[in-house]
Amino acid sequence: MWFALRHVRSGRTRFTLFAALVALVSGLIMLLTGLGLGLGDASISGMNQVDADAVVEQNGVRLSIGRSLVDLSTVEKAAAVKGVKSAEPLGLYTVSVRGTNTGKGPADDIALIGAREGSWVLPDGAQSMNANTAVADTALEDLGYKVGDTISVEPSKRKLTIGAFVDAGTYSHLPMVFVPVKTWQQVRFGPVDGVGQIPPGAYKQVSAVALQLTDTKAPAIETALANDNLTVATGKAATAATPGYKEETGTISLMVFFLYLIGALLVATFFWNATVQRTGEFAVMRAIGAGRSRMVREHLVEVSLIALTGLVAAVILSTGISALLPQGVPFLLPFATVISTAIGLFIISLIAGAISLRKVIKVDPLLALGRNV
Image 1 (cartoon, rainbow, N blue to C red):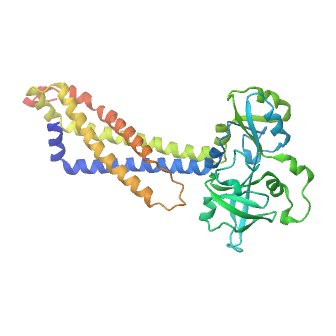
Image 2: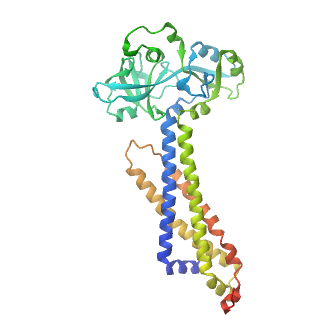
Image 3: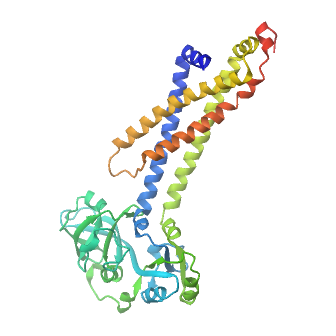
């Protein structure tokens, strides 16, 4: 260890610059990880809170709840199937709203969710929901809306009063707003500008049926609904089918993967060159009796020192930047994720640094006496 510390001190400028490079690459990986988690959470946090074990949807819509329509009678059919604990109707429709405090300014997009009053699909604190009163996610409050505001839902011009703001989550980056199923049906199938009649069949339609199961492998559900042009998906599969979710998280994951590769190559290349330059020093150590195990230990200590210095700086950098980001930025980086990422990067650094161990172990002690390689 003494030899490694001495070598780092003697080349402090070079090692400081390399540690800074490790810090920047590692910090970028952590920030991209936080961006990926934030984008994913903004897409599916609302559906995660619904917490359904399974979802019954229209067949042929690729599990996209927003494109699905099922008959309301499916709720009773599904509830009667063995293994189903509870079945609840669920409506989902993306619309635009304007509030009394925003006047004729730009409309704001929301995900309007229809659910039965008292249903388990509702978020905590949604007790104030009724026919003309909606419960909205706090993200809508951040846009300037207040409790008691009347909002006009486009294009039906349906008026709703905001009864409360709760942590309802978001769907495809849109704040979720909960209303009773009948109100949702009036908005979903209502005439444009409120002129005309709502079709009688509108009150028999919802987007999907959310299920809680006593047996998560209940195959009887598919059998019971086989003739109704319906498909049954797990709650996780239905959530993952949220528009844009896989594309966003997949893109970020690919970028993070390549950054891991770049980081590993940087560490491997740096220590390979450093080892080649120090071949004479290692030869002297072998000539005076230093064992291979000690030389390996000194090399790994040196790799660890540089990696740890860079990673500590990366942790400070990423947590500092995340604390300064505006509230509306989709960014989520728990400290546990920062630490686990740092540990993973440290292990990768050790593996990359170990690539040059072969030259350390195979060094010829006669080089110390001036023999040419």
